[in-house]
Structures are given as C-alpha cells and as structure tokens.
Image (cartoon, rainbow, N blue to C red):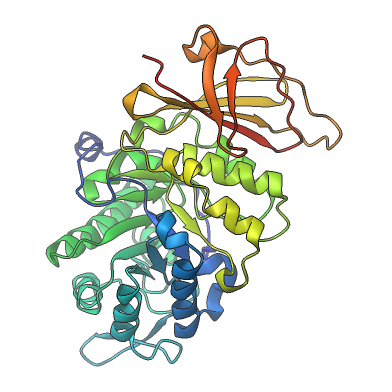
Length: 398
C-alpha cells in the first residue's frame, strides 16, 4: 500500500515492550497463506472480485495447497454514521454476506484499516473508533486485519510531536497496541498484521502488542530489483520470527509485472525460506498454468509451513551467488543457492562450501523445483542462470 508520506524515524525500542518480543500467540502458528487484493486490483477491488478470487482459490487447488485467507485491502470503506459506525461503500454492499460466502468455501476473510483518520487511499481510518471497528470486524466474521500506518504519520505523530522522534514512536506503538487490545477483546481469533514499513525495529516490539506479522520494509514492486532489495533487508532478522509472529517482507508479486519465471521461482522460494506470510496478489481467474505451478509447489510450501518456524539465515556469498539455509523439523535442512547477478549469459559456476553450512561429506538432497534427488558435495559444479535458484531439502543431518 502506498503511504501518504515518509518519515525517517529514529530507532528507539521501548525496553518494556522489547522484553516481551517473543510473546507466544495461539494464532498464526505457521505463516499465514492466502491472497490479497492490492497488488492486482488496487483501489478497483469489488465484492465480485473477492468472490471470484475465493472461487478460484478453491478451483485452482490453491486452497488444498494451504492458501486460506482472502484479504480485502484498501477502498472498501464508506462513511461513518451519527453513531460512528463505519459502513461499507457501494463496491461492498454487504460485508457479512461476503464473509459468509468466503467461509462457505472453507476460506477466511481479511480486511484493511489504518490507525490514522484516513487510509492510504484516503478512505475512513480507525482513529478514535478502534474498539468499535474491531467489534464490527468480529460481528462480520473477519479473520485477518492489515493495519496500515498511513495518515497517522502527519495527523498524529508529526502534529503532536513534531520534533521528538522518541515521542513519535511512543504514539505509534500506542496506536498499534490499542487496536491489538481491541481485537483481543472481541474474543475472535483475528490475525493482526502490522504495516508500518519496518520503521523503528518493529520486530522488537510488535509481538507484545499482539502482532502476528509485521512489515519489515516499504512496498514491494513486480520487478527483480525490488524483490532483491527486500530480500537483502531480511538479513539478521531471523531471530525475531517464530510460531505466532513473523517478519513480513510484503506480499507476493508472482504472476505480476515482468518478473521472469526464474525470478518468480526465486521470489517464491525465498519468501518460503524466510517464513514469510505467503499472500499471492495476482489475477487468480486468469492465472497462467506456470504461475499456478509456482504458487502451488507443495515441497516449497512445506518449507514455509515447517512447524519449527525457523526463518532462513544468510550464510555467505561468493561472487554473485548467495547461500541461505534454515533448519527444519526432524533434523532436516533447506538450502537456497541464488545467482543474484544480472548477466543473462553467465551461469556463474559455483561450488558450495558444505562445512560453512555445518555439513560434512556427501549429502542426500532433493531439488524442490525439479523433484529430482541428488548427492550434494563440495566438488559438485552448480550452474544457475541469472536470478535463478537451486532450492534443496536435505534429509536429517543428525
């Protein structure tokens, strides 16, 4: 979601919140999977688009692969009445009926708001109506809330504390805490997704506010450089992710823009490795078979949904090749080898340094994109086209 303005906030962690950073949550024990309307429909999304997308999630096999949430982003909001009740606009004539329809498919419905007076698209936000809105979401049957900072920056942070970055942070945290408490008070299990662009080390304090995921960066775009830049910003954040609370590098762009098939595989693979929420954002009714094959790769999804909940760590790079790894349950390990170079005519032959991964000798592995088994050794020459990936699952290394 595009924000109304940006603000270089100082990193200022509250000790009382940071101490609770690994607060357990019974919600989102594995990263949420689903679809969000913004990347494809943006402000044009309608009730029909959501119903059609829900239908396609089921028909395409995405539901069976684990995609459960159907999330409406911005522009569903209408006006508030004299009692402060927020009504939907004409694009969404009956949100309760829509939720019932989505639930009838065995799926869950998500929605969007902002702690500010307006959303990023200048629709009604939740400022001053947090408890009222949370109760309304629960009554509708909402299962997921994306809460986007947006106008809270100029309307509250800059207005109330124009020259005090620490005070601005306290205001922001208090706003997210207020909605977190309001959602909890409803008694309904609603995934709480914080969207404030990774400012002020959000990963240190979001779990204590009931956050199940939090954006670590600005918005993703459907181009390789954006995907790569966001990937690089995930280095070092692995200690903050785990069951119930996940780093969120933003939604998937698989099937959008001009991403090549190699780039789409790498994008999906690395979001899976990062234990990121897997929220597709493409045109589901017109999805190409090769895009569906990427989004429904069960072996890759299994890495993302592994119950151990460990986020991948960057291990090392050599030339234009990066190596990432994560531990899996039962002593298994996933390894990602990426050619991040832009030379279309160079495959950058690469020999993996297994000891740097804590591995010694030949390792039995499975290539999760070809499905083929292989014996991985430090002598094996690995050649990857530009922006492509070799994603491996290694059996128990115990």
